[in-house]
Length: 118
Image 1: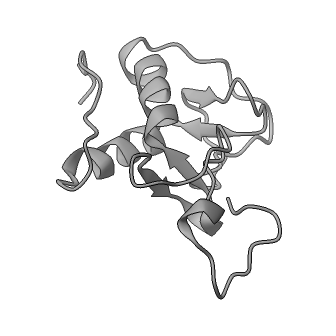
Image 2 (image 1 turned 90 degrees about the vertical axis):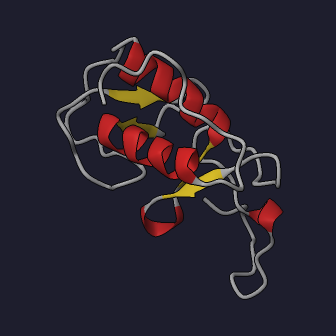
Image 3 (image 1 turned 90 degrees about the horizontal axis):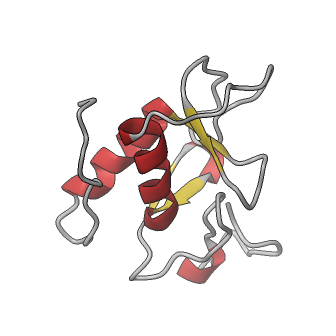
């Protein structure tokens, strides 16, 4: 997401916010972008990955609810931001986003240990 009032022609890193915690993108806070400018930061992704992939903990999806990252209504495990209830990421996007950050050699982020789900 973008900070309210962001000039799209001159957007800066600090204008890009994580949809799940609303913290800005920085050199230390990696982000993965989803559809229509949605973003998840590495900190939120770590929590989501631990809960959904490793611990297999998830609330049941609500009818009509869409993943912020892929904009799809998916009947699968997902993680909901404890701070912003409308911010939901599906298991598929958690795993894809984790793969993106984990493979990027310029980012010091790794998948949490205990991944037995591929």
